[in-house]
Image (tube, rainbow, N blue to C red; front, side):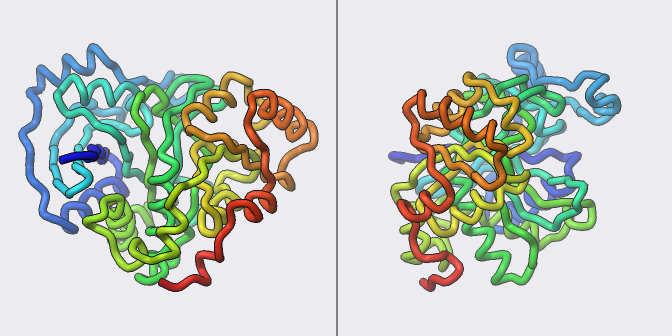
Amino acid sequence: MTNQKTIAIICSLSDVASVNIKDNLLKAATWTVKELPSEDAMKEALSLFPPTEPSEETMPSAHEFLGTNLFTGIFELQASDVLFRLILLDGKHIFQDRLDLRLKHLNMPADQIIFASKHRSKSETKALTVHPTGNAGESALGGFPQSLSVPMPLEMKKMILAMADLNERLGLAFDVTMEVTHHGPTALSVPSMFAEIGSTENEWGIPLAGEIIAQSILSLSSDFGFDLTRSDTYLELVSDPVLAVGFGGGHYAERQTKDLFRTKLAFGHIFPKHQLDVLTETVVSDAFLKTGANIAFFDKKSMKGDDRRRLFEMISAMGYRVLSDKEAAAEFGLCRFDEAGD
């Protein structure tokens, strides 16, 4: 089939939310059970392309539940434009650096990877989230220091729009939001993202939350679209997207998320206000190159003056445009998504 891509969906068996999403994916369509690679082949792949491990200093108890990093189940769903491959993993998502190379070595190459995961926060916010991975500074939670993955800006936008619509129609009443770039894995050569249910064990296993994430993943194929994804407003929002890197704001990227619903912007990497002072020229340049962006979005009100001026000069010298929230809305804005009909 022409122009077909393979999306690997990774389910961690130690993650309640991940299993919830997996169960709902399997209920949503007829999947084919595939034969697992041999244990020897999987161990060889792990030896050649090892995942990262935490240090005892940064995560003292992590070695107790890291798992074997072996695959325990594989399911495939063939759509006209996407091959979905659901992979059950005995391991933790955030340490799966080089997973793309292991999959390729095992004759299961992926064009994109979605990690179905739980989200944990001190605020205990009930939320459905998506985000790219990367470390602006140190790498306490997987990945490598000052290293970024290749994000999936358009797919993250499509999923946010789908999640918000389903969340409202099905009455879940969770927040739906992008998160900023954080944690691992970072050593992946193919685009990847996390799709998460948050933020406590009370929410991770809610079937409706798992259903919404599952349906939103499947909606990345035109075969599994629904009323929203066929609407004129949705199609206008996702057609010819303007890719951007975000700077400023809090962990839940409120202003960037808002612009997904009212402009043609699609965000790759986003750096919150508390990380701006550690951003190096190398990391910033990498964010634009890996996102494929020519636009920097500044949440100016949240940024310290020194950070704003330093980053403006740095980004302008790289040849990229810097826009504020108001400027982005004026240049790339459409009607407000929540006021638009089909």
